[in-house]
Length: 75
Image (cartoon, rainbow, N blue to C red; front, side, top):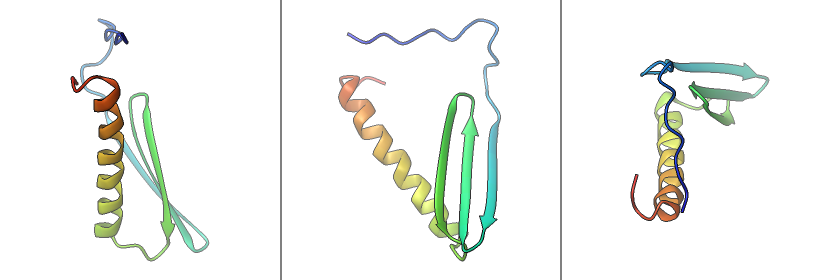
C-alpha cells in the first residue's frame, strides 16, 4: 500500500503558481509551475487563450484518472 509523505511543518501552506509563456519561432511554450509540479504545453504560436486553457484542463483530467485508479479511489 502506497503512503504519502507528510508536508514538512516548515513548508509554506500555499505554493505560488508561476505561469510562463514563450514564443519560439512558430511555436508557443507555456509552462505552469506550483511547488514541485511542472506542466509544459507546446502548441502553434497562433493558439488562442481558450484553446490553451482547454488543453491544460484536458491534461488535468488525464492525470486525475490514473491517480484515482492507483490510489484506490481515495485522494
